[in-house]
Image 1 (cartoon, rainbow, N blue to C red):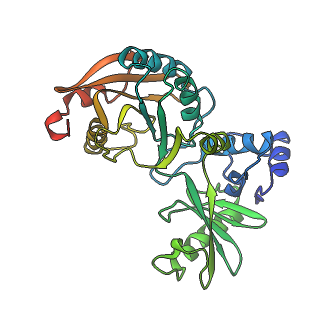
Image 2 (image 1 turned 90 degrees about the vertical axis):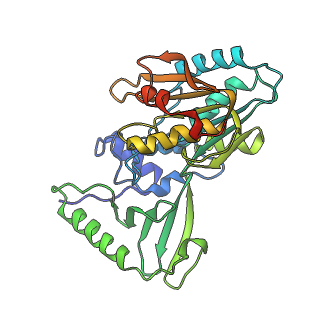
Length: 323
């Protein structure tokens, strides 16, 4: 048996309607469909969101997010922000590991009427994918640092992240061959910095929600930045959120400590850190709101069961961070 790929929006809709593919598993859908252009239709936006929910990166993290995912957390955070800061200040908010930034936009739209001088930065380590099109035919979709996620050659789309099912031996063979060829490609060292090479073309597939892109173009107070949760930006913001990223399933204890220190450094004294995770089984949010103090972190409030790294954060000594 074999499976053909999905290359166009109408193919995707027909396949879902015919139940040839479940909407929860779209590994045979070309990631080209993430590139919806400047004026996407409602159908294109829906497909963008559905692909994003199941796209897994090479470090094991998922891009899962959806509208109103943090509605209860937003309400708790805004209550503490209003209590802690004057509405007249130039409030600076950062939302790191923001996935495609839709939930960042929703939070910013709630904050801006309350803080007219506020600025909001949504960041992620990956706001685009790279498409490497070979002059001999076929294309690879890669993460920005070059890790291959998908191989596309009509009429096939195969995942290079997960094994194709034994039920589809031809797809498995295509994927295995694509991996071998990629490892042997004669690419120059700086191949992603130019759009054309002797044997390839390079293009970008945007991976930010169309609504967030459009709003950032219209309102300079809402900014999109490529940034890691481990980046230290000394006292750059009053509020910092890191949801669904600083988890024990993604990082070691030492790495989590580094993320905690980066957060502490980046917040102003008296700043608020929001950290936690969304449970996959019921999409409930569990988070801890911390206050940055001279002596370290103190807990302001817990939503649900709180953050799984709460105790670790409370043990990280502030003397190793910038106050």
